[in-house]
Amino acid sequence: MSQMPQQAAVPKCPSCEEPLESGDRFCGACGYDLSVVPARPEDSPTLAINGAVPAPDGVDWPVARDSDGHGHPAPAHAAAELPGTDSGGSPLAPPPPPAPPAAPPAAPAAAPASSAPGVRFDRPDEPDEYPLQAPDPRLTSEGAAATGQAPPAEPTAAEKVCVACRAGRVDDDGYCENCGHAQPRERDHMEQESGPIAAVSDRGLRHHRNEDAFSVGCTALPDGAPASVAIVCDGVSSATRPDDASLAASRAAGESLLGALPRGTHPQQAMHDAILAASQAVNALADEPATAREQAPHQNAPACTLVGAVVTAGLLVVGWVGDSRVYWVPADRTTPPARLTEDDSWAAQMVAAGLMSEAEAYADERAHAITGWLGADAYELEPHTASFKPDRPGVVVVCTDGLWNYAESAEEMAEAMPLDAAARPLHGARVLVGHALDGGGHDNVTVALLPFPAPPQGAGSA
Image (tube, rainbow, N blue to C red; front, top):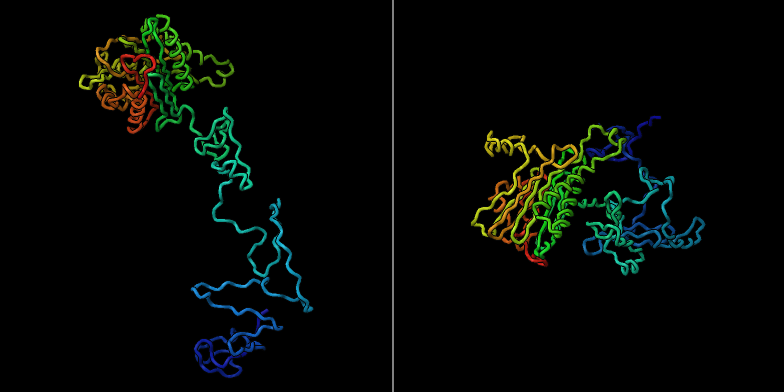
Protein backbone atom coordinates (compact mmCIF):
# COMPACT_ATOMS: atom_id res chain seq x y z
CA MET A 1 0.00 0.00 0.00
CA SER A 2 1.51 3.33 -1.07
CA GLN A 3 1.53 6.34 1.19
CA MET A 4 0.35 9.81 0.26
CA PRO A 5 2.92 12.58 0.59
CA GLN A 6 2.61 14.61 3.75
CA GLN A 7 2.30 18.36 3.88
CA ALA A 8 5.25 20.42 4.99
CA ALA A 9 5.62 20.51 8.74
CA VAL A 10 8.76 22.69 8.91
CA PRO A 11 9.15 26.45 8.22
CA LYS A 12 12.33 26.03 6.11
CA CYS A 13 13.49 23.54 3.52
CA PRO A 14 15.84 21.00 5.16
CA SER A 15 17.96 21.04 1.99
CA CYS A 16 18.39 24.71 1.00
CA GLU A 17 16.73 26.43 4.01
CA GLU A 18 14.38 28.49 1.82
CA PRO A 19 11.15 29.58 3.58
CA LEU A 20 8.19 27.29 3.03
CA GLU A 21 4.46 27.96 3.01
CA SER A 22 1.84 25.85 4.67
CA GLY A 23 0.70 23.07 2.41
CA ASP A 24 3.86 22.93 0.28
CA ARG A 25 4.77 19.39 -0.74
CA PHE A 26 7.98 20.30 -2.56
CA CYS A 27 10.49 23.11 -2.04
CA GLY A 28 9.96 25.84 -4.62
CA ALA A 29 13.67 26.60 -4.76
CA CYS A 30 15.40 23.18 -4.93
CA GLY A 31 12.46 20.80 -5.42
CA TYR A 32 13.19 18.85 -2.19
CA ASP A 33 10.50 16.28 -1.42
CA LEU A 34 9.03 17.50 1.83
CA SER A 35 7.10 14.27 2.36
CA VAL A 36 10.28 12.63 3.67
CA VAL A 37 10.53 15.13 6.50
CA PRO A 38 9.30 13.43 9.68
CA ALA A 39 6.26 14.90 11.32
CA ARG A 40 6.75 17.00 14.39
CA PRO A 41 6.22 14.95 17.53
CA GLU A 42 3.14 15.77 19.49
CA ASP A 43 4.97 16.00 22.79
CA SER A 44 8.28 17.74 23.35
CA PRO A 45 10.40 17.01 26.41
CA THR A 46 10.75 19.87 28.81
CA LEU A 47 14.35 20.77 29.39
CA ALA A 48 15.44 21.73 32.85
CA ILE A 49 17.69 24.69 33.48
CA ASN A 50 20.74 22.48 33.64
CA GLY A 51 19.90 20.92 30.31
CA ALA A 52 18.95 17.51 31.72
CA VAL A 53 15.68 15.77 31.00
CA PRO A 54 13.64 15.19 34.17
CA ALA A 55 13.15 11.50 34.84
CA PRO A 56 9.58 10.20 34.83
CA ASP A 57 7.85 8.93 37.97
CA GLY A 58 10.32 10.79 40.17
CA VAL A 59 13.16 8.26 39.74
CA ASP A 60 16.52 9.87 40.42
CA TRP A 61 18.45 8.72 37.36
CA PRO A 62 22.22 9.26 37.50
CA VAL A 63 23.50 12.02 35.27
CA ALA A 64 25.61 10.63 32.46
CA ARG A 65 29.13 11.97 32.22
CA ASP A 66 31.03 12.53 29.02
CA SER A 67 34.34 11.43 30.56
CA ASP A 68 35.85 10.14 33.75
CA GLY A 69 38.25 13.06 33.87
CA HIS A 70 41.12 11.18 32.23
CA GLY A 71 39.97 11.25 28.62
CA HIS A 72 38.19 7.88 28.84
CA PRO A 73 34.41 7.45 28.32
CA ALA A 74 32.45 7.16 31.52
CA PRO A 75 31.18 3.67 32.36
CA ALA A 76 27.56 2.92 31.54
CA HIS A 77 25.19 2.05 34.36
CA ALA A 78 23.48 -1.30 34.27
CA ALA A 79 19.77 -1.57 34.94
CA ALA A 80 20.40 -3.66 38.06
CA GLU A 81 22.16 -0.70 39.70
CA LEU A 82 18.86 1.25 40.02
CA PRO A 83 15.71 0.35 41.97
CA GLY A 84 12.79 -0.58 39.74
CA THR A 85 9.02 -0.90 40.05
CA ASP A 86 6.51 -3.04 38.29
CA SER A 87 3.45 -1.81 36.42
CA GLY A 88 1.54 -1.53 39.70
CA GLY A 89 4.20 0.60 41.36
CA SER A 90 5.50 -2.14 43.69
CA PRO A 91 9.28 -2.60 44.11
CA LEU A 92 10.77 -5.34 41.96
CA ALA A 93 12.17 -8.47 43.61
CA PRO A 94 15.99 -8.70 43.66
CA PRO A 95 17.44 -10.73 40.77
CA PRO A 96 18.23 -14.38 41.53
CA PRO A 97 21.92 -15.34 41.97
CA PRO A 98 23.65 -16.48 38.78
CA ALA A 99 23.44 -20.22 38.16
CA PRO A 100 26.65 -22.21 37.56
CA PRO A 101 27.44 -22.73 33.88
CA ALA A 102 25.78 -25.84 32.53
CA ALA A 103 27.11 -28.25 29.92
CA PRO A 104 26.21 -27.25 26.36
CA PRO A 105 23.13 -29.07 25.00
CA ALA A 106 23.49 -31.82 22.47
CA ALA A 107 21.57 -29.84 19.83
CA PRO A 108 21.45 -26.04 19.50
CA ALA A 109 18.33 -24.52 21.04
CA ALA A 110 16.07 -22.10 19.23
CA ALA A 111 17.07 -18.45 19.49
CA PRO A 112 14.93 -16.39 21.91
CA ALA A 113 12.99 -13.45 20.58
CA SER A 114 15.01 -10.29 20.31
CA SER A 115 14.30 -6.73 19.25
CA ALA A 116 17.58 -6.65 17.32
CA PRO A 117 17.25 -8.64 14.08
CA GLY A 118 20.24 -10.59 12.80
CA VAL A 119 21.71 -11.31 16.24
CA ARG A 120 21.78 -14.85 17.66
CA PHE A 121 21.83 -15.60 21.35
CA ASP A 122 21.71 -19.40 21.20
CA ARG A 123 25.51 -19.71 21.45
CA PRO A 124 28.22 -17.71 23.20
CA ASP A 125 30.66 -15.52 21.36
CA GLU A 126 33.37 -17.59 19.70
CA PRO A 127 37.00 -16.63 20.39
CA ASP A 128 39.30 -15.67 17.57
CA GLU A 129 41.76 -18.40 18.55
CA TYR A 130 41.11 -21.76 20.13
CA PRO A 131 43.60 -23.04 22.71
CA LEU A 132 44.90 -26.56 22.34
CA GLN A 133 42.89 -29.06 24.32
CA ALA A 134 45.93 -31.22 25.10
CA PRO A 135 47.14 -30.98 28.70
CA ASP A 136 50.22 -28.95 29.42
CA PRO A 137 53.14 -31.46 29.57
CA ARG A 138 54.80 -29.24 32.17
CA LEU A 139 51.85 -29.68 34.50
CA THR A 140 53.15 -31.46 37.59
CA SER A 141 51.18 -33.38 40.16
CA GLU A 142 51.57 -30.51 42.64
CA GLY A 143 50.39 -27.92 40.14
CA ALA A 144 47.45 -30.11 39.15
CA ALA A 145 46.39 -30.48 42.77
CA ALA A 146 46.51 -26.70 43.25
CA THR A 147 44.38 -26.00 40.20
CA GLY A 148 42.08 -28.96 40.59
CA GLN A 149 43.15 -30.47 37.29
CA ALA A 150 44.14 -34.07 36.82
CA PRO A 151 47.79 -34.49 35.86
CA PRO A 152 48.54 -36.33 32.60
CA ALA A 153 49.15 -40.01 32.96
CA GLU A 154 52.85 -40.80 32.84
CA PRO A 155 53.96 -43.36 30.24
CA THR A 156 55.32 -46.58 31.62
CA ALA A 157 58.93 -47.57 31.13
CA ALA A 158 57.99 -49.91 28.27
CA GLU A 159 56.15 -47.20 26.31
CA LYS A 160 57.72 -44.68 23.96
CA VAL A 161 57.68 -41.04 25.01
CA CYS A 162 57.08 -38.21 22.53
CA VAL A 163 60.26 -36.46 21.39
CA ALA A 164 58.36 -33.13 21.13
CA CYS A 165 56.45 -32.72 24.41
CA ARG A 166 58.41 -35.34 26.38
CA ALA A 167 55.19 -36.37 28.13
CA GLY A 168 52.74 -38.13 25.83
CA ARG A 169 52.58 -41.76 24.84
CA VAL A 170 53.32 -42.71 21.23
CA ASP A 171 50.59 -44.81 19.63
CA ASP A 172 51.03 -47.66 17.19
CA ASP A 173 50.81 -45.28 14.23
CA GLY A 174 53.79 -43.24 15.43
CA TYR A 175 51.91 -40.18 16.73
CA CYS A 176 51.91 -38.65 20.21
CA GLU A 177 48.61 -39.10 22.06
CA ASN A 178 49.25 -35.82 23.90
CA CYS A 179 50.35 -33.29 21.28
CA GLY A 180 49.82 -35.23 18.05
CA HIS A 181 53.44 -34.85 16.92
CA ALA A 182 54.61 -37.43 14.37
CA GLN A 183 57.56 -39.31 15.79
CA PRO A 184 60.76 -39.91 13.84
CA ARG A 185 61.22 -43.51 12.88
CA GLU A 186 63.87 -45.39 14.77
CA ARG A 187 66.11 -45.79 11.74
CA ASP A 188 65.86 -42.21 10.49
CA HIS A 189 69.01 -41.41 12.45
CA MET A 190 71.10 -43.98 14.31
CA GLU A 191 74.33 -43.64 16.27
CA GLN A 192 76.35 -46.25 18.11
CA GLU A 193 79.67 -46.21 19.88
CA SER A 194 81.36 -49.47 20.84
CA GLY A 195 84.66 -48.99 22.58
CA PRO A 196 87.07 -47.22 20.23
CA ILE A 197 84.82 -47.45 17.15
CA ALA A 198 81.61 -45.65 16.20
CA ALA A 199 79.01 -45.52 13.43
CA VAL A 200 76.31 -43.06 12.35
CA SER A 201 73.49 -43.58 9.86
CA ASP A 202 71.01 -40.98 8.60
CA ARG A 203 68.02 -41.09 6.29
CA GLY A 204 69.30 -38.11 4.28
CA LEU A 205 67.27 -35.26 2.86
CA ARG A 206 65.51 -36.88 -0.11
CA HIS A 207 64.55 -40.44 0.85
CA HIS A 208 61.39 -41.21 2.80
CA ARG A 209 63.10 -43.91 4.87
CA ASN A 210 66.57 -45.14 5.81
CA GLU A 211 67.48 -48.30 3.93
CA ASP A 212 71.03 -48.46 5.35
CA ALA A 213 72.08 -50.49 8.39
CA PHE A 214 75.28 -51.15 10.31
CA SER A 215 76.77 -53.37 12.99
CA VAL A 216 79.81 -52.51 15.11
CA GLY A 217 81.50 -54.35 17.96
CA CYS A 218 84.73 -55.22 19.72
CA THR A 219 86.14 -58.58 20.72
CA ALA A 220 89.46 -60.25 21.48
CA LEU A 221 91.54 -62.77 19.61
CA PRO A 222 92.61 -66.02 21.33
CA ASP A 223 95.88 -64.38 22.45
CA GLY A 224 93.96 -61.51 24.06
CA ALA A 225 94.78 -58.96 21.36
CA PRO A 226 91.90 -56.55 20.65
CA ALA A 227 89.88 -56.67 17.45
CA SER A 228 87.32 -54.18 16.12
CA VAL A 229 84.56 -55.06 13.67
CA ALA A 230 82.30 -52.87 11.49
CA ILE A 231 79.72 -53.92 8.89
CA VAL A 232 77.79 -51.42 6.73
CA CYS A 233 74.94 -52.44 4.38
CA ASP A 234 72.99 -50.45 1.80
CA GLY A 235 69.55 -51.70 0.72
CA VAL A 236 68.89 -51.84 -3.02
CA SER A 237 66.01 -49.39 -3.48
CA SER A 238 64.67 -51.10 -6.61
CA ALA A 239 64.22 -54.35 -4.67
CA THR A 240 61.47 -55.36 -2.29
CA ARG A 241 61.99 -54.56 1.43
CA PRO A 242 65.51 -53.12 1.05
CA ASP A 243 65.52 -51.88 4.64
CA ASP A 244 64.85 -55.37 5.95
CA ALA A 245 67.58 -56.79 3.73
CA SER A 246 70.27 -54.39 4.97
CA LEU A 247 69.29 -54.93 8.59
CA ALA A 248 69.33 -58.73 8.29
CA ALA A 249 72.68 -58.72 6.47
CA SER A 250 74.43 -56.38 8.91
CA ARG A 251 73.28 -58.35 11.94
CA ALA A 252 74.20 -61.74 10.48
CA ALA A 253 77.66 -60.60 9.34
CA GLY A 254 78.42 -58.84 12.61
CA GLU A 255 77.40 -61.82 14.72
CA SER A 256 79.42 -64.16 12.51
CA LEU A 257 82.61 -62.09 12.87
CA LEU A 258 82.27 -61.54 16.61
CA GLY A 259 81.75 -65.27 17.05
CA ALA A 260 84.54 -66.49 14.75
CA LEU A 261 87.43 -64.21 15.75
CA PRO A 262 87.67 -65.33 19.40
CA ARG A 263 87.78 -68.95 18.19
CA GLY A 264 90.99 -68.27 16.29
CA THR A 265 89.59 -68.04 12.75
CA HIS A 266 91.85 -65.93 10.56
CA PRO A 267 90.25 -62.47 10.12
CA GLN A 268 90.21 -62.75 6.33
CA GLN A 269 88.52 -66.16 6.45
CA ALA A 270 86.13 -64.86 9.10
CA MET A 271 85.19 -61.97 6.82
CA HIS A 272 84.51 -64.35 3.93
CA ASP A 273 82.30 -66.52 6.11
CA ALA A 274 80.49 -63.45 7.45
CA ILE A 275 79.53 -62.35 3.93
CA LEU A 276 78.15 -65.82 3.23
CA ALA A 277 76.13 -65.68 6.46
CA ALA A 278 74.74 -62.28 5.46
CA SER A 279 73.79 -63.64 2.04
CA GLN A 280 71.86 -66.50 3.62
CA ALA A 281 70.01 -64.07 5.91
CA VAL A 282 68.91 -61.93 2.96
CA ASN A 283 67.95 -64.98 0.89
CA ALA A 284 65.71 -66.12 3.74
CA LEU A 285 63.64 -62.96 3.37
CA ALA A 286 62.55 -64.12 -0.06
CA ASP A 287 60.97 -67.30 1.35
CA GLU A 288 57.38 -66.04 1.26
CA PRO A 289 54.16 -68.04 1.26
CA ALA A 290 52.92 -69.00 -2.17
CA THR A 291 49.81 -66.85 -1.68
CA ALA A 292 51.95 -63.75 -1.12
CA ARG A 293 53.91 -64.41 -4.29
CA GLU A 294 50.68 -64.86 -6.25
CA GLN A 295 49.33 -61.54 -5.00
CA ALA A 296 52.52 -59.69 -5.99
CA PRO A 297 54.06 -61.68 -8.83
CA HIS A 298 56.19 -58.76 -10.08
CA GLN A 299 58.01 -58.14 -6.80
CA ASN A 300 61.70 -59.01 -6.80
CA ALA A 301 63.65 -60.46 -3.90
CA PRO A 302 65.04 -58.26 -1.09
CA ALA A 303 68.63 -57.21 -1.80
CA CYS A 304 71.46 -55.10 -0.38
CA THR A 305 75.18 -54.43 -0.64
CA LEU A 306 77.72 -55.08 2.12
CA VAL A 307 81.12 -53.76 3.14
CA GLY A 308 83.04 -54.54 6.30
CA ALA A 309 86.37 -54.20 8.08
CA VAL A 310 88.24 -56.00 10.84
CA VAL A 311 91.04 -54.13 12.63
CA THR A 312 93.52 -55.85 14.93
CA ALA A 313 96.83 -54.74 16.42
CA GLY A 314 98.70 -55.22 13.15
CA LEU A 315 96.24 -56.36 10.48
CA LEU A 316 93.45 -54.68 8.52
CA VAL A 317 90.98 -56.92 6.67
CA VAL A 318 88.21 -55.64 4.39
CA GLY A 319 85.38 -57.46 2.59
CA TRP A 320 82.61 -56.30 0.28
CA VAL A 321 79.91 -57.09 -2.27
CA GLY A 322 78.49 -54.10 -4.12
CA ASP A 323 79.50 -50.46 -4.29
CA SER A 324 79.96 -49.48 -0.64
CA ARG A 325 83.58 -48.65 0.17
CA VAL A 326 86.46 -48.70 2.66
CA TYR A 327 89.00 -45.84 2.82
CA TRP A 328 92.32 -45.61 4.67
CA VAL A 329 93.19 -42.20 6.13
CA PRO A 330 96.56 -42.04 7.94
CA ALA A 331 96.90 -39.99 11.10
CA ASP A 332 99.78 -38.12 9.45
CA ARG A 333 97.88 -36.19 6.80
CA THR A 334 101.10 -35.47 4.92
CA THR A 335 101.07 -39.11 3.78
CA PRO A 336 98.56 -40.11 1.09
CA PRO A 337 95.21 -41.78 1.90
CA ALA A 338 93.90 -44.73 -0.13
CA ARG A 339 90.72 -46.47 -1.20
CA LEU A 340 90.84 -50.16 -0.28
CA THR A 341 87.86 -51.58 -2.23
CA GLU A 342 86.74 -51.76 -5.86
CA ASP A 343 83.09 -51.23 -6.71
CA ASP A 344 80.89 -53.95 -8.14
CA SER A 345 79.39 -51.45 -10.59
CA TRP A 346 79.04 -50.71 -14.27
CA ALA A 347 81.48 -47.79 -14.02
CA ALA A 348 84.15 -49.90 -12.32
CA GLN A 349 83.82 -52.57 -15.01
CA MET A 350 84.25 -49.98 -17.77
CA VAL A 351 87.38 -48.62 -16.11
CA ALA A 352 88.83 -52.10 -15.42
CA ALA A 353 88.29 -53.09 -19.05
CA GLY A 354 90.04 -49.95 -20.26
CA LEU A 355 86.97 -48.82 -22.18
CA MET A 356 86.52 -45.51 -20.33
CA SER A 357 88.46 -43.29 -17.97
CA GLU A 358 87.27 -43.09 -14.37
CA ALA A 359 85.96 -39.56 -14.90
CA GLU A 360 84.04 -40.60 -18.00
CA ALA A 361 82.63 -43.74 -16.42
CA TYR A 362 81.33 -42.07 -13.27
CA ALA A 363 79.84 -39.22 -15.29
CA ASP A 364 77.66 -41.73 -17.16
CA GLU A 365 74.07 -42.21 -15.95
CA ARG A 366 74.75 -45.97 -15.66
CA ALA A 367 77.71 -45.45 -13.33
CA HIS A 368 75.99 -46.62 -10.14
CA ALA A 369 74.29 -49.66 -11.62
CA ILE A 370 75.64 -52.43 -9.38
CA THR A 371 76.85 -55.76 -10.72
CA GLY A 372 77.10 -57.55 -7.37
CA TRP A 373 74.72 -57.71 -4.39
CA LEU A 374 73.27 -59.99 -1.73
CA GLY A 375 69.86 -61.46 -2.49
CA ALA A 376 68.03 -64.49 -3.77
CA ASP A 377 68.04 -63.16 -7.34
CA ALA A 378 71.74 -62.20 -7.35
CA TYR A 379 74.24 -63.70 -9.74
CA GLU A 380 76.78 -66.18 -8.42
CA LEU A 381 78.01 -64.72 -5.13
CA GLU A 382 81.66 -63.70 -5.17
CA PRO A 383 82.70 -62.19 -1.84
CA HIS A 384 85.72 -59.90 -2.11
CA THR A 385 88.25 -59.86 0.75
CA ALA A 386 91.66 -58.26 1.14
CA SER A 387 94.24 -57.94 3.91
CA PHE A 388 96.55 -54.98 4.62
CA LYS A 389 99.32 -54.28 7.11
CA PRO A 390 99.55 -50.49 7.51
CA ASP A 391 102.92 -49.23 8.73
CA ARG A 392 101.49 -46.23 10.60
CA PRO A 393 98.40 -45.33 12.65
CA GLY A 394 95.28 -44.06 10.94
CA VAL A 395 91.53 -44.38 10.64
CA VAL A 396 89.53 -46.87 8.57
CA VAL A 397 86.38 -45.37 6.96
CA VAL A 398 83.59 -47.85 6.10
CA CYS A 399 80.73 -46.16 4.25
CA THR A 400 77.89 -46.35 1.74
CA ASP A 401 77.72 -44.38 -1.48
CA GLY A 402 75.52 -41.85 0.33
CA LEU A 403 78.78 -40.50 1.77
CA TRP A 404 81.39 -41.16 -0.91
CA ASN A 405 79.22 -39.52 -3.55
CA TYR A 406 80.24 -36.27 -1.81
CA ALA A 407 83.86 -37.32 -1.14
CA GLU A 408 84.68 -39.77 -3.91
CA SER A 409 88.45 -39.70 -3.94
CA ALA A 410 90.58 -40.74 -0.98
CA GLU A 411 91.96 -37.21 -0.78
CA GLU A 412 88.45 -35.73 -0.57
CA MET A 413 87.50 -38.21 2.15
CA ALA A 414 90.60 -37.35 4.18
CA GLU A 415 89.88 -33.64 3.82
CA ALA A 416 86.31 -34.05 5.05
CA MET A 417 87.30 -36.11 8.12
CA PRO A 418 88.34 -34.26 11.32
CA LEU A 419 91.97 -34.51 12.39
CA ASP A 420 90.99 -36.01 15.76
CA ALA A 421 88.79 -38.76 14.31
CA ALA A 422 91.00 -41.51 15.78
CA ALA A 423 90.51 -40.13 19.31
CA ARG A 424 86.85 -39.12 18.77
CA PRO A 425 85.37 -41.57 16.25
CA LEU A 426 81.73 -40.74 17.03
CA HIS A 427 82.36 -37.06 16.49
CA GLY A 428 84.24 -37.84 13.29
CA ALA A 429 81.38 -40.00 11.98
CA ARG A 430 78.89 -37.23 12.72
CA VAL A 431 81.04 -34.72 10.84
CA LEU A 432 81.22 -36.99 7.78
CA VAL A 433 77.45 -37.53 7.77
CA GLY A 434 77.01 -33.78 8.08
CA HIS A 435 79.33 -33.32 5.11
CA ALA A 436 77.02 -35.48 2.98
CA LEU A 437 73.89 -33.70 4.21
CA ASP A 438 75.44 -30.30 3.51
CA GLY A 439 76.24 -31.53 0.02
CA GLY A 440 72.58 -32.34 -0.67
CA GLY A 441 71.85 -35.60 1.18
CA HIS A 442 70.39 -37.25 -1.92
CA ASP A 443 70.80 -40.75 -0.46
CA ASN A 444 70.90 -42.51 2.88
CA VAL A 445 74.24 -41.87 4.60
CA THR A 446 76.08 -44.40 6.77
CA VAL A 447 79.69 -44.40 7.97
CA ALA A 448 81.71 -46.32 10.57
CA LEU A 449 85.17 -45.25 11.79
CA LEU A 450 87.75 -47.71 13.19
CA PRO A 451 91.10 -46.43 14.53
CA PHE A 452 94.16 -48.48 13.52
CA PRO A 453 95.77 -50.21 15.27
CA ALA A 454 92.95 -51.45 17.44
CA PRO A 455 93.33 -49.82 20.89
CA PRO A 456 93.37 -52.04 24.00
CA GLN A 457 90.02 -53.06 25.44
CA GLY A 458 88.36 -50.27 27.44
CA ALA A 459 89.62 -47.42 25.26
CA GLY A 460 87.02 -45.22 23.66
CA SER A 461 86.14 -41.73 22.52
CA ALA A 462 87.34 -38.85 24.60
